[in-house]
Every structure is written in C-alpha cells, then in structure tokens.
Length: 89
Image (cartoon, rainbow, N blue to C red; front, side, top):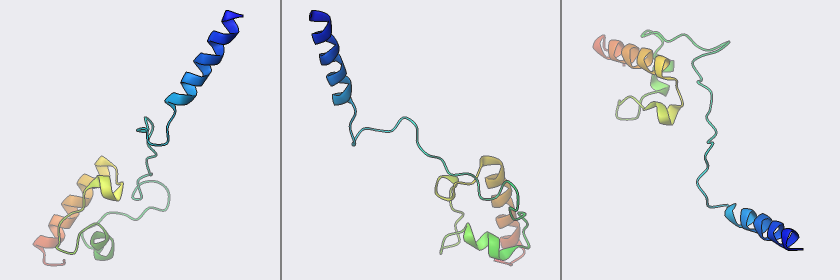
C-alpha cells in the first residue's frame, strides 16, 4: 500500500515541476535562409538581398535576429562591406 502512495505522490510532483513559464531546454531554431536548395547566392552586386540584412541605419543585422548560419553570416558581412566600399549601398 505504501508503494502505491509513493508512486502517486511522485507522479504529482513531476507534474508540478512542469510549468508554462519554465525556460525551455530545447529552443526551436529556424533554418538558415541562405543555405539549402533554391537559396540566393550571396554577392556584393545583389543589392536587394543585402538590403534585407541591413538595418535602416545601414548596420549589419546580427545572425541571432536573421537566423543566418555563421558561415553565411561571414560571407554576408563581407559582401555588404564590399558593396559599401563601391558605393552600391
């Protein structure tokens, strides 16, 4: 009889641990929009693409906002800087 009571309390305590306001251990991560099939090629001449990844002030948006992978973020920042140098942006 004690074993059943122990199991019941244990299951209730596990349920109590689950909360809507808890920090999620596994956060949903979006895929990189610049990699994969049909993704646009990063180039300093592609101004329409580069403008999507810059703010209104002309600053490069960070990858945590745009969900771009690290490799593509480096290519993107390099091409934005090249376009700035050539006064395309």
